[in-house]
Image 1: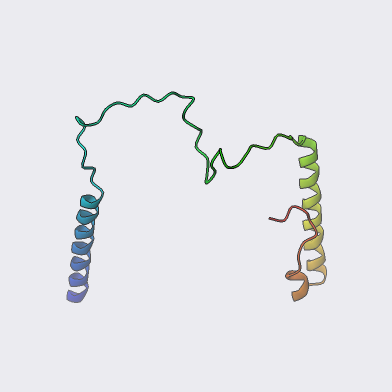
Image 2: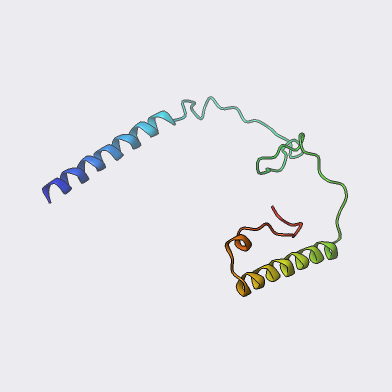
Length: 106
């Protein structure tokens, strides 16, 4: 029990020391008086993207109708369901690891 309390107290001390070091390393050195307000127009700010730069990746111009997308998804679901049913009927290792015939494979 004494060793457990010793290890617990040393771990707590180490965590506290790391928190102090992290706070000191990430502290902002500028004071609020030194900061000048920057006026930015709303048109200059691009909407945030996830790992995408708007200048590098152009937006696609062609729009696919919703019905086409729904038909592709429905076909994909039918193919996956047929593959699952065939595996249940005749389970083999080869059929478990075979590739799908659906075009919606990621």
